[in-house]
Image (cartoon, rainbow, N blue to C red; front, side, top):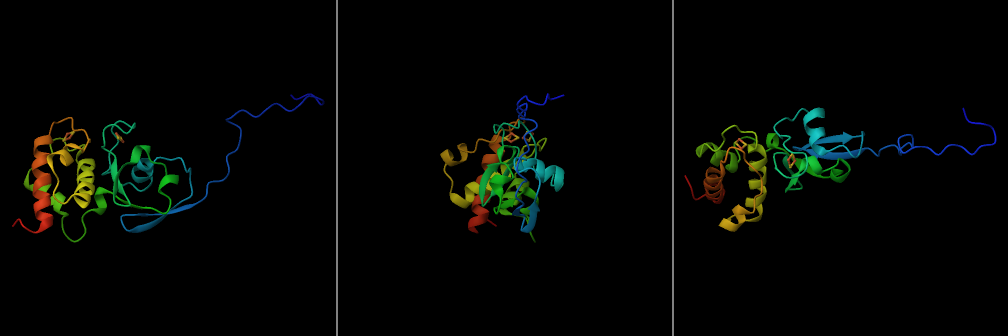
Length: 175
Ligand code: FES
Ligand code: FES
């Protein structure tokens, strides 16, 4: 117990209360959400554990594998390293939000080329390619090689073929 004339014991970091989080609006797959929990929560946890959007996968948790890739304002982003605070007022697209009334060209190309093996990395791969083709409608080999998402099953040759097919589908040249 604290004696009367002693200075108060400094609070340990664990007992210092954080300011109440500021509720943050955000848009996910075109729908509005309002996060009023921990602002440091990784976006990946919010997607998978709160919204149950489990298409986005957890691989490494350190930004290395890309299994957790989603689009934030159209840019491919590792959601395991992205806090809810960082996506306040931003628009997020997950694999679930890619298809609307028909398949996205990247999804179509993936199916045509039978890309997936175990499939675990594929949502992240597809989201990375959607970003690439939005920036580079006719990607070079170097552009394609710049996608650093990992695939344990080694589907890289089929991913490359599917990217070229998706580029053609997007351009409206392919039947
Ligand atoms: S789980 Fe995010 S990069 Fe691997
Ligand atoms: S398809 Fe299995 S990890 Fe990529």
